[in-house]
Image 1 (cartoon, rainbow, N blue to C red):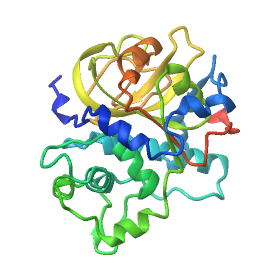
Image 2 (image 1 turned 90 degrees about the vertical axis):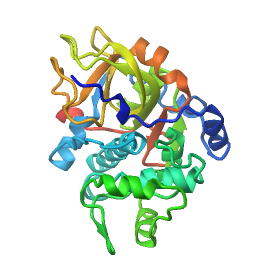
Image 3 (image 1 turned 60 degrees about the vertical axis):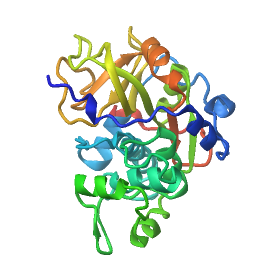
Image 4 (image 1 turned 180 degrees about the vertical axis):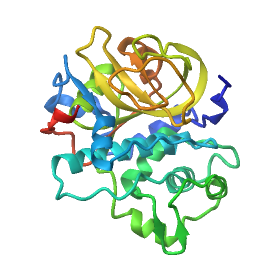
Length: 301
């Protein structure tokens, strides 16, 4: 399989992460973990099945530029939205998968203030902060702007320094913010979050094999500057781990487990914590203020 690591785009910038965290009300998830701590032990939760149930399909994204931070965030937002709808169908309705071009641009130019110049990529925390403060849009048309389909030309032109997102985009997005973002650092935090219906983005330089093993897991291999999303955990299996969803289309192969989506792979709990979560740029997303226990109907899982 060809090397797709050039489709990364995560920028490793601990000082930038620290600066953003100073502005967040709940910067570190461990500080507010107590209400759900331990609730995921020995349990399984497949958020991608909730997305399928609510949306009627699973959005298999295929990025074409270094906009992985927005791709990972879009998966996280889709999961949060679908959990909200799954719990209370009167809360809102599914319209379309989350757009990415505006998140990528907003993370770089509104939150990052153009500091990355003409270089590609962004920080995970910048994208998280953008959807928290400015919102996230479902794919569709907003005034004269058509975001119905992924458009790599918009990815590139909107990412350039000094670009200003149109008012039609900003005004519509502000109606749909993610309520809370917090940094996650351990597998146990990830496990408890996912089991309660929250989503997580991960960003690191750790790559993974393009061939899943007999149990659907991929071994750590190579180096990617990349952001992805966690859309499932299985803590009841003999190999505790998390389901990582990539945004490179059908890039990998091998056996699957729990009908996992194309492009995804399981990662062992200890590998996730040791090689990925240590970066400090991995984030939990909540649709509500705070992270409270949620009563999920798991019959579809």
